[in-house]
Length: 152
Image (spheres, rainbow, N blue to C red):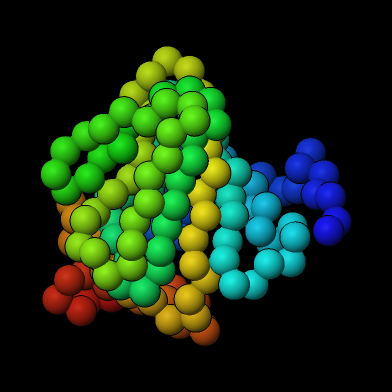
């Protein structure tokens, strides 16, 4: 198994969200470890959240499982039913098709680092709990629409 030199992997700070939602992830840094290893069936990201940053908008997937494992710091897991603190060594999982919008937010004064692991389905639909948006993933990319189907 080839060793990955994490220091040579690109760090992504951008988001694919429409501009009006992009600020929620300001302060998020991702290193796509799964891509660096050439993985195709599941993704692995080493993600860092600066204080005040969120992993994403609160969302859930119809077709992709997700799992997070906190490596350092303290993250607030925000779900439809409330908030839970996750500390280093703690984890959470989200089964595909379960309508429980979730995200991680760094409400602390120190960075949070965690691994996020998820299915790489070629087709998926994701729903956002707090904003008027749905996402559709296909082999040609991701398309965001309002919940009534109107494109962003």
